[in-house]
Image (tube, rainbow over all chains, first blue to last red; front, side, top):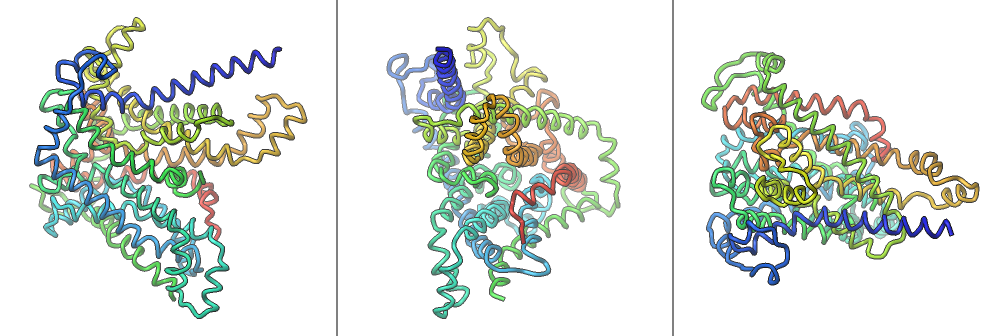
Length: 281
Length: 284
């Protein structure tokens, strides 16, 4: 009897914890969504069920999307995310393969891996000055191109480390068979190994896109007008204009929906991605 | 030979976009700037300023407080949640999927949204608290509570990271050890103390390290939620350095500040480094 009663208690506790955790995680998203579809007057009242408690409206979404700066920022963010992630995968994949399959001496594989990993330790703020000065010299301030280069740089270690783990998990026999058939190293890589890691590669690409979309410090430092992406559009706007809950809701949703949807697409690889491959999820 | 060719683009890229800017920052830190243009070589004087700048020290204090509190709370909450949910459960994959959402939500957007969530007059947090009988908390106008708000947002965003990684590691633990412990009549507390904790230690250690490194970089949330205020209450290190560079155009000094942050983070990592090597299977 005693066992059953404690298990009932633990069941109730478990459900309680689950519900609390879900509510805690989901509330901010739901709150942003709610405000984005409320009429301004309704945002001052705490009501949580559209149609029953208030009449929803799409007017703020339409108004926000009609703003040229917002459209430009959405386009810029998309270009930066896709461009940086693609570049980082293009450069990172061969390097990842090299670290997984070839044995280097002086400097050895361990050195290279540590070197790529250590890039993660560098504080981004240390790079604000040099990048600002370099981009000013190159006349690349306020350009999407500069932000593509920078985000590719910051996602490159991630691509290299995570993809080299995936290559290492492939059985060598397939490539060895290809070598026996007279394939070059490049053919073994491109025609045998690459197709096999494709799901992981796509996941790494998706996660890199989300990281690049979310990047804020360099976007803020290097853009002034034409190159501004979404995170810069929203930063600090309300401090100067006064808080308009409904536009906060729309802009928040517009900014965080793309990366969160991307994350859901790469679900299987998230834990591995976030730990740079150290823990397999 | 082919191997070197494969590796070359990435190595060149890091040299050009990471090592060169680093050296350039070093060069910058040895000079004074006027109106955003290089003025003169001043040796280590920018570095000497690091020791006497009260505002920088305030930024460092705020950052240390932020790092210690957020990382500690995230580790405890995330690991506890993973322990509780480490069992057969319907809908677990849906729950895990939902838990990834905060991790990928744009931090600036989350901080920006926080302005409305922590709105002092009738905002959702204060409404909820007042229904519990707690009087209005001045979330964003009071120095103490503003830092608490920034910390809460960061905890919201990153606790799922600890949870997801811990859960993945817990599920990979060998089941036979637990069966043996059960046969031997070990209590749940003993099992946790002598099996789960030692086996999880490397993962927890890795999580701690990753969170520490990332937390020291904090910038987005205080910038969007509080603009570093009120006063300097939430002006974290990176925010102060950003302002030194981009608002006061004191490029040389900002670069010196960046190096100090790098040294602080590197020392912490170096203290823990041997273990990371093992975790990343740096066998060759």
